[in-house]
Length: 301
Image (tube, rainbow, N blue to C red; front, side, top):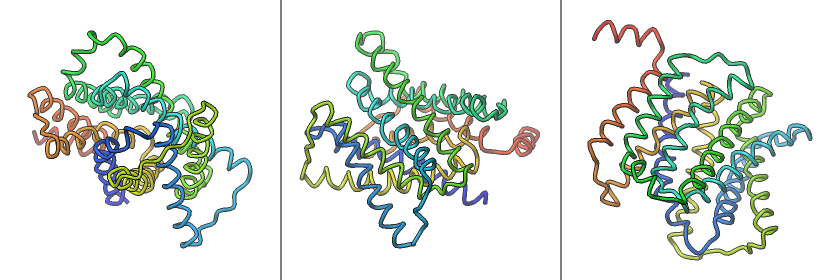
């Protein structure tokens, strides 16, 4: 069980860390709403094929469909829209800093909605993770005051992050109600893509598609790996280790993204960034390693 959870954890971090680079090929001629709708629409189609091939049960009650639709609205629709809109006023680094706060939001929402006790070591690890990400992107944080439009970008990104946290709570509730992760994802992504398409049409944004190879390859990667596999792994973790610990993947994947940027975009690491990575690693250690093993490590040191 532990080995499987670690595999799911690493898969989530590595895949989502690589999606930062893939998303760049999605921005341009295609409106953000349609880019999101295409991504989760294709992901839902792939999951439908998988479910039909494996003959997984797909009949659920209206009430269960309602909960899956809510999961789709919060996790595969509104949160992405707000984060995409925030990118027009904030850099990706600042978005990563804000989004890392989902760890803290999941802890508080878990206590609020499910009465889960707040573990001090989990809270400490979450705060260290956010602090570490702030160190990594310190140059962008330092330049925030000079950007007058950044305030609304911050509001949108905080709102998007909180909505994503509520989506985590909904997924946790759905799993408690014995809704399988794969089936709740296939319906959730279907509902999310449909709602995003309807929202775009209501606003008069007509569908546009880019036929370029880079757009289509990145779309396939984001749909198959970034949505089907990564969300499947992450939401399985939410059910196994809880939303608070699972959300720490959101702190780690921006660092993976910077590693990819180092290779493909000539990113240069600063001392602040290196210190930040060490702080994030410490927070990860505190959250994931059992308390007894932490005490043993402390005695050995």
